[in-house]
Image 1 (tube, rainbow, N blue to C red):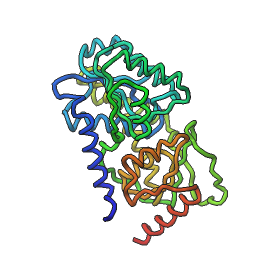
Image 2: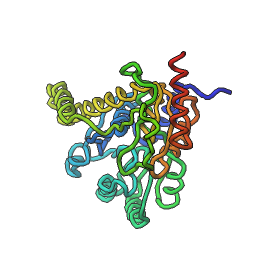
Image 3: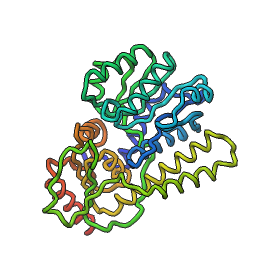
Length: 335
């Protein structure tokens, strides 16, 4: 039996997301969406846009309160919506690698015990069990927390340590749906490799000087400021502060996603250790070889959801990744 096409996979994972969330959100109550990713990583913007697409397609609604990490206000959320579920943006921040996001999560549980709080799909990684125990205590006191996770090891960890509902759910970026390339391929193979603290290895690139090596965390601040300003201008006539904020957030996220898709589109085949380069390559229908990040996040997600198509190859080494990508690029060029 042939592997599923990327379009079949996208549709299937969207259905799984809807099943995971069907009893968490309703059409007749407001929701808050917190922890907008106001930073350069394209993958987090893809998650945000998938979350917003889910709310729009399923409930024809937008959040009644939104915030980034830096402008979150407990009092402003209470004023905007005294009741209704609080949705926390998904990603790879559940744990102690990115502590500011975890502190926000814990503060929400402490402030609103019993109020529905839904953590959109995350990968869990703790370096210190002391930090995990602190989160466990916050969850136990709260008593109405739903935790969606993106892989089986995260699910097993959460079920062992946290007293809450835990559900295995695909990454929300799949709710963006299929994406068209933003340029024709310009190079046979493009390597998109992490340069942050989740980097697993320092690869020897000397044998592959013909392969461009890039990451997607560099951006023009001016470009993002302009995107935000244009978003605000389009919504200004509404005189609705939350609608204006959403327009600003969405405009920035769309600009970042376009930058990432434009970047990936340049390669006929991709090599990557980033989870959302893998996901975006699937949304694009672009062949790609996959390495892992520092704690296994990418392979764990592929094991759970996305590793079954012919478009992705679980590389055993950087050399294997390049060889596979070159063979795919040659095949695509001759097609």
